[in-house]
Length: 304
Ligand SMILES: Cc1cc2nc3c(=O)[nH]c(=O)nc-3n(C[C@H](O)[C@H](O)[C@H](O)COP(=O)(O)OP(=O)(O)OC[C@H]3O[C@@H](n4cnc5c(N)ncnc54)[C@H](O)[C@@H]3O)c2cc1C
Image (cartoon, rainbow, N blue to C red; front, side, top):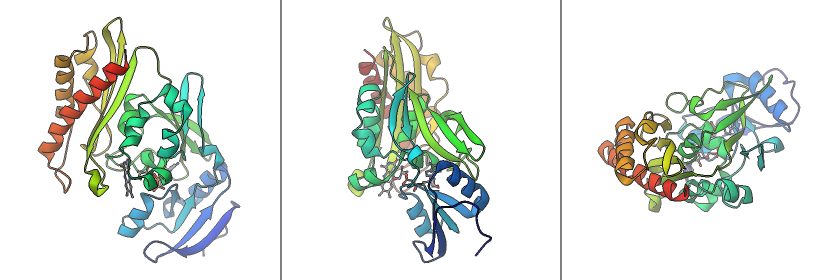
């Protein structure tokens, strides 16, 4: 047993999913959790819904000595609307997004991503914060949050700061977070007139498997002309990818199908897909093109 930790809160010892010893901590405030994670450093990982962590423990890709549960951190719960932004707590589940009045009235496109997300059991257990922090390229919420210009609130032992989501991801499955840092919430601007966004994904859902390729698109239309456009991709690059150069193709046009197809080609060019058990690189690149056109068409309809 190491030196006594200064931070109070529940602390248990037990075995992880494959029988290794692990200490389980359950701090009762965000400040305590950040301080505890800071003290424990690389030996600890935060535990939210556990739908990725438990898989990693079983596979042995993570073997922490300490698990720090976020379950009692009420500051990480809830969905609110204020100052023109929709703020979603890190512990909010896909099911809670699906049933939220605030989401339905301001950012209904979240339902596109929730609709393809896992099974009901996974949607009840997984969290928005976990989906971002796991930094998997196939995470279904990330492309949509990228095109909506999301900002991540990061709590640290010395206070909170905001990070634009497009600066949050590192290389494969990494983020800018350091030991002692927790995502407490993610915010997106409320929908403005003339804006539309959508997320389209292709997956082998019969096998409850993760997305093979996904595309989110955002359009802003004013007096029939496009004044803003963004595309982000999932499952075709080391981390969720905001595609560069899309505005140059679409801004100033009527965002008709030929221009949407040109933007989709730019997205397919930017993708860096791999071949794996779920699909070949060539198939994924083709999917990106089609999913991007489809997402843009839905976004254009919603922008009316
Ligand atoms: C059967 C199955 C189906 C799935 N289907 C999908 C799917 O369709 N789409 C999809 O996107 N994902 C899917 N997933 C993956 C997973 O459910 C999601 O990534 C989920 O959002 C992770 O959230 P969690 O709360 O369970 O994270 P956890 O497993 O608790 O944590 C994931 C990672 O994030 C860190 N973390 C969690 N919360 C925070 C925080 N607030 N601050 C800092 N770090 C944090 C943890 O330390 C860990 O490294 C599936 C998983 C399973 C097992």
